Amino acid sequence: MPFLIINIGFFGFWILLNSGVFGHDLIIDKYPFSFLTTTVSIEAIILSTFVIMSQRREAKLAEARTELDYHSDLKAEVDVRTIVSILERLAAKQGVNVADLLSDMTRTEHDTIDKAVRDEAANQ
Image (cartoon, rainbow, N blue to C red; front, side, top):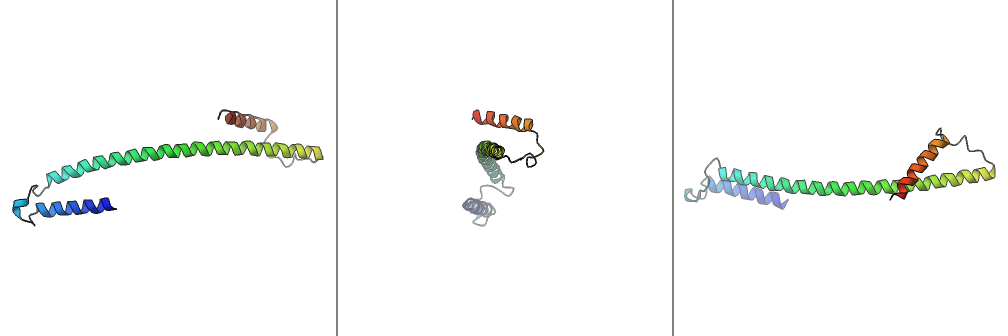
């Protein structure tokens, strides 16, 4: 906000100064304000460079957060699969049939997903 106030004050002073409000002897940039236009253009170039650098830094942080989320989700998936496996073994020991409770996913699909998750976890 201070940047905006400083710019408005500077541009207002520049326009008043070069409009002859403080005297015609002080005019350094006549009405189309060519020098002011050039100055504003250079300021826009510099500010856009800062904005782009800031966005690039934010994108890198977001990418790191996404990668961290992915790995934590992967670890959670491994834990869930382990718990399901333990529960299935406990149910089998107790003689409880859990086949109707399992999803429509076949055992080979479970095994394929388990292998992929464990391989990815091992590569960390």
